[in-house]
Image (cartoon, rainbow, N blue to C red; front, side, top):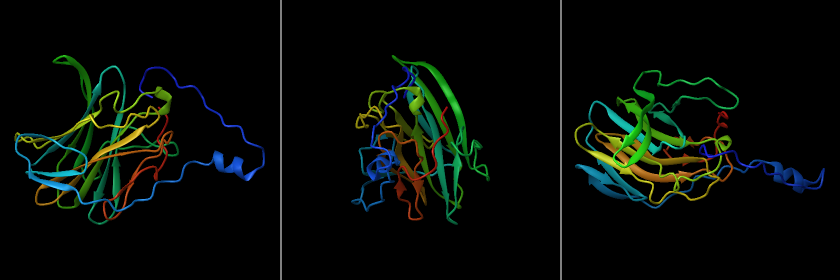
Length: 240
């Protein structure tokens, strides 16, 4: 899935006209949102902090929050973000559309959240990395932002662990929250990850989530009114 050759096509033989055959052809049902244990709150971030799974931390709110997702330059990922507003509607900020609707927009209608695309490709230190960046100007109408990392099946095989996909959230005032890839999924056929959720309040609340799509799924996640992320429940991404 990550630019190292095409995957082999897989077929499943079933008896024609049987219920079992129909069931095997059906797409996997979305995973239901289930209540999770309360996250551990680390308080207010000072300097650079790396989160573990189910940890929460807050950043001091500044005019612009920058979300950067990085991976090795030798492969290719795409980033988009779900932006939930307090009136309940959700906008998607992306550089590509879905299988049924190729239209996309790189910013929210109010211009508060902007996908800046490939910000940087090149050597940094001993590692050659690529970045995609989402810039957030928080206003009172924005409730939360859900960054999503994706790579299409057509790109070949790989895993989020193998390619060390990480995310940082920077308030531009010297405080950076890192969601590293050390605990990432190792399945080569998982194509979508939600590293964390950013919630707007008096401060900027960040939770390390690390939710993954089902193996083989190209469906986007959705977000419920109470902020739960439901994987594999949205539209199918456009094959790139």
